[in-house]
Amino acid sequence: MKMFKQAILGAGILTAGVVSAQSASMNNMIKVGATAGIAVPSDNLSAAVGVDVAYQNLITPGFGLGVATGYTHYFGKDNNGYDNNDVGVVPVAALFRIYPKQTGFYFGADLGYGFLVGNDKVAANSTADRPDGGFYLKPEIGYHNRDWNFFLQYQKVFSGSNGDVVNQDYNVGSIGAGFSYNIPLGN
Image 1 (cartoon, rainbow, N blue to C red):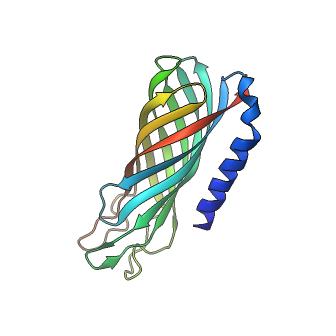
Image 2 (spheres, rainbow, N blue to C red):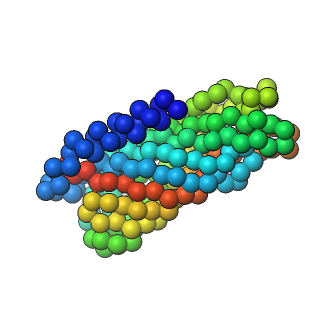
C-alpha cells in the first residue's frame, strides 16, 4: 500500500508541475492517470485500483506509439476457505493508440510483461506460491481531447496455471474505467 500512495503522490506532483506547459506541441507527451475496476474472473480477487504513467509519440496525427508502466493494486477475497492475499501488478509494456479524429473516439492497447508483487503466497492459509508475472494485456477504448483521455479497459496478466489451488484458479485481471491527463513534451 505504501508503493501505491507514493505512486499517487508522484503523479500529482508531476501533473501540478507541468500544467503551464499546455502551449507546447502535442507530438510527444507523458500520460498520467488513474483506473478502477472489478476483478474478472473473481476466484481470488475482488477489485482493483491503479495509477498509470506512459510516454507516447504521435507517429502520425492518428497513430501513437510509446511505453507504459504504473501500478495496479488488486484486493484479495475469501473463496473456498482460502484467505487470498492482495497482489500488485507493475507492467512494462509497449503502448499503441489509434485516433481516428483529432478529438473523440480512440482505441488501443498496452502489451508487455506484468510483474506481480506482494505476498509470495496466493493465500494467507495456503502454501501455494504466487506467480512472479506473465504476459500483460490492456486493451482500451475511450474518448480523448487535447488534455484528457477517458476510457474503459480490460487488464490481464496471463500466468498460466501457476498459483492455482484446489477449487480455485489464480487470476489477475479486471474490467474497469479510467482517465489520464496528457502532459505535452514538445516536438
